[in-house]
Image 1: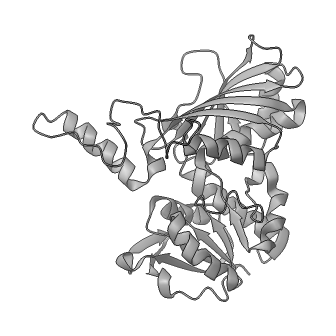
Image 2: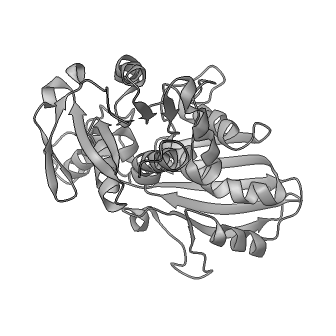
Length: 340
């Protein structure tokens, strides 16, 4: 016995990764449908050893389907998610549309798994922003021990966070730089991303922060604790896959770096690689394809009474998006639907 699963946006980077992870984790699937826009109708995608053809999202009937994993933009989600939810299919949405809706749970299963129980108000569960997801996995076990007061985070976010167009732009610009007859053009990003960094992700807000930075603040408060103060600087870097974060944490009470290291080693979803030697830490390229959130460079911050610094790396297409959505589906199945 298993679940009837729909993957919406199955031809995109995150949709394909959802299918890969459902197969890798042997999610109990009784029946699966893959949906895309009409222009991608009939495109073939892989699910384990099977090849599936996409169906038309616009005409699909969600009745009789248990869960739908949405990997499309907010505009399309706004149109189709309520239809799926009204048909009795629980929507697990990867867009930002419902993250800040008080009637929609925002879930990272290692952090607030019980929040899935609030799905019934709208039949929708939201997946957090990719940069938030990996950070809160690291914050929660430390918060449980010493209560976090304030977080200062600087992100180093890969171009895959902007979708296929972002990856294509980095590739095309890199080739153009080495070809003197080619022009280096920027369309997806605000400036050249190849051999550069851009301190600008999403739109600017009135206070000078970007929407990406605001998301990290709002989502951390909703997922972990509303009392935590967060300030973020989000930067796009010329890496294809894998987000990195330098995180400074101030606690209400002292937490020794060795104890923090032990806590993180025992925490779900985390892999600690922290040797104080050349190469004794994890970089984005090493995290690609892995389920874990990697933590390195754990050390005391001597400039404040109760501070720690750490380095956090994760595959943003996995933990930041597809993996977290599948984990939500697993949690919903275990706690509510119980068909697996």
